[in-house]
Length: 259
Image 1 (cartoon, helix red, strand yellow):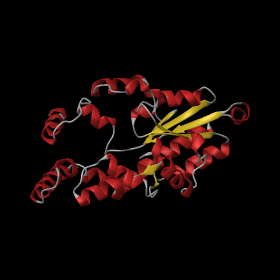
Image 2: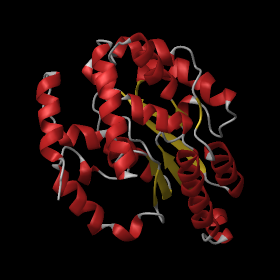
Image 3: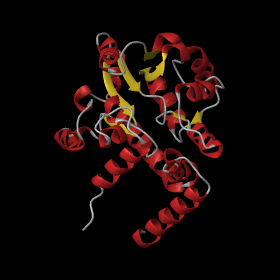
Image 4: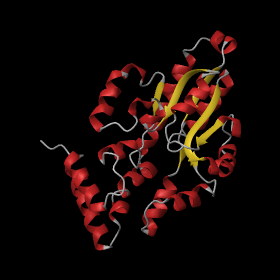
């Protein structure tokens, strides 16, 4: 893998630069191709939802009868596959902007992450209520709702869609759910989807927190793969805004560990 992948990235970089591809666009090619083309990506998604289903089946039936149980899930790259948007930006040699994102979400065209629909339908059938806590803006509820309904996702209505209004932290929205429900499972592709303990923390602290709650992964916390974007990338840049492409590249290189 090492001897093949590194030269391939070097070749990709050389070709991209010869075609004047934007640096931020260039580094997205491999992650987006992996999400769209790698059977390994599909396998990881099915694996995550299979584990989630097993954990759900471990909950006694009487708990569903006696309590109000809920599953909280993120949407983007957890339930909805938005790789088409990233792929189009690469093809058009454009960078991600709020406008380009809105153009995509307005299409209501995201497909489901492999295994997502079957799991959420099974969770609903067992008696769990599904809440979609997403950092899509509240203005995107109108375009997201038909997308969820088209995919036949349970509890696809505005009551169960808690979108971003004034803060990107999801903690307050999770608390809205926990006031009335026993949350038995959380799903996400970003560690901020699970607890605020990961928010705006350096790389090493995020890793330490992962270790601290290691028994939750694959039990109450179910993680989906996303190598294209997320807080892991922001942590590399130390949450600094307005970095130039050159500054970002320097930080990426500084984080690489050789032998």
